[in-house]
Image (cartoon, rainbow, N blue to C red):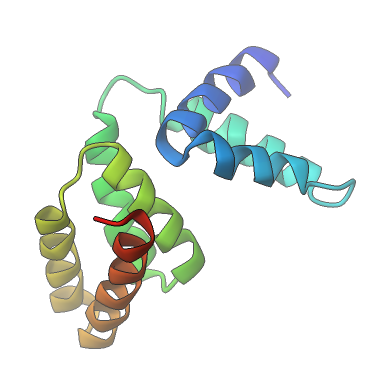
Length: 125
């Protein structure tokens, strides 16, 4: 593991997902899942999310479409919250899910809108 890349990734992960979520993920890691936490933090957050080519908001918008298309509801909810933290509006999220639904099917849009409403209610927005 590259400690410097991990630390940069950890900082971005905390900025996007929030300290509480990241602290819980790290605290709940055991000998089996600790390598996954290191892999995700260093790889995704440290090597990709820190690249200069896209703003965090744009990366969040891409993630919403990708996670919806891949039918990953847990990760989609996490990244809806992260997208809001990165300045993506509810209106933009709706547009992302409408477009995703057009190309991936109406059930994708229906589930994505439902999950987004759950996150919005939890965040009181």
